[in-house]
Length: 88
Image (cartoon, rainbow, N blue to C red; front, side):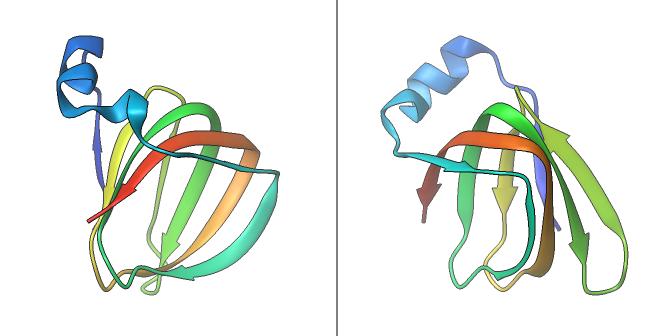
């Protein structure tokens, strides 16, 4: 399952988040499989991720999100996304 947290700026700085690469994506819907875990911090946007079992979770600007290795899901980007990301 996706882990969503609200972190303070000092916590993000300590983790080096602001030096991670940035990914941007327009409003869209697509399937995704995580062959490795990903941590990311959303600077902009809103997303709904739906799991294979039909359950979904929403997150966006200001959220620190961790996606586990092996997760298969569908992304629905409802407002354009800009995020820092790091694959483990």
